Image (cartoon, rainbow, N blue to C red; front, side, top):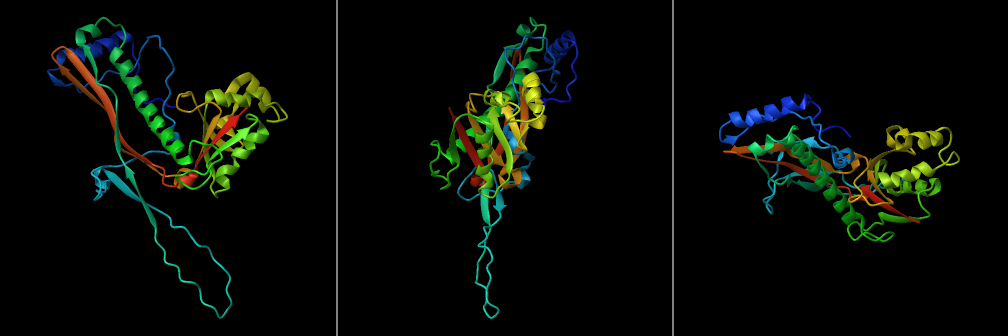
Amino acid sequence: MSNLNPNVQVESDEILTQRLLSAIAESGDGHCKNASEAGTAMIRRRLRENGFTRLILPFQQVSKADLTYLPDSELPAIVEEMEPDSPGAKAIPFNDTPDTQFYRGDKFAVYFCNITTPEYTKNVYELMTYKNDLRQVVTDNALKDIQTEEDNRTITEVDRVVGSTANVVSPVTGLVQHFSINGGITRSNYKEVLHHLEDRELNNGVFLMNRHTAKEFLEWDRSEFGGDIAERLALEGLSALSEAKVFGVRHIFTMKRDIVPDNVVYEFAEPSFLGRAYVLEDVTMYVEKKRDILRFSAQEKIGVTFANTSALGKTTFAG
């Protein structure tokens, strides 16, 4: 997954720290507009990854002019249209007339929410005791935390739609969209996952699983994967899967096991059959210095709606 700050220039720790401290010391009380650049030699505690929600449903930037104000809500929203269902065609005798069919399009609203980090506070003189740019490290982690919250809300909504009990009709959609397969992730069993969306006349867009679950592919031998791919998986791990494709379907392997459970595969149709994701206000840092105290926080305003709820699926492998 790509870096959130691709244009950042990395310099020595001493230059970065001095730049941060100079920007703070030379500015008056109020808002500091100068931000330090990324770079650190600190030992990291764990690897943080960007969000997977934006890989499932690409976000589009919108502005205040795009908003629709609804009579029953004060929340900002955008109203979108969804194609109408079709009754189909039929053959009739030459002297007969066609049936009358009234048509209308469906509409749905994309509501926006605010995702924010805590307000981080630090005395600027305490920052002088660090060789590395502590503020930038906290900022980078905070941006990752924002996308983690996006992912958490996405999976919570998918679980609500497909239902908590496998092989039972969802109370939201009236369809079976949460499946359970016994016997583990074998090639024969995994083939069944491809049917769930296609049986509802949708293409498989992207599948999501955690890396722990994805390592089940490493057990597939030449009889299951075929050719040299089995050997490459044994030597190179999951990176041997070109573009993370299995059976022609793009996969996302995430480290977030607390959000995406083990032995679970989430299935999403292509974005144009799925819904809308909008950014009303991109991630914005609010930095304030008053006397010797530096405060900063980050927030974004986004809206995500899965309009076509039948375009979601979930499979739990047992055994």
